[in-house]
Length: 134
Image (cartoon, rainbow, N blue to C red; front, side, top):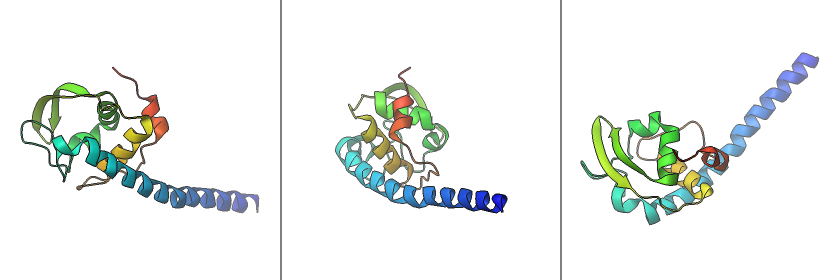
């Protein structure tokens, strides 16, 4: 009986985390779309396609999929130097945007769940706060 109750409790907890994360993720994505429109669209364009050989695409980006921490760091602190996205090398500067950690999390959730990108894990304020400038 104890094993059954423990198993039942564990399943209920896991399911409730999933159920409650979905609305939080949707709200974060909505806020992130507004931040993207204010800060990112000028360089990365409406559909995240970027500008050839100047600003890397965010749409279907292998860099975003494979470099979560580096992507968050770039949005939080800006970045410069060579960056390879979908097999193309970009060498431009992205100035720091001056976003708060919650805004970085929201815009990352929007980007990671738009234009062919998918992320199984929501970017949280705590995750963004733990990332330090290199």
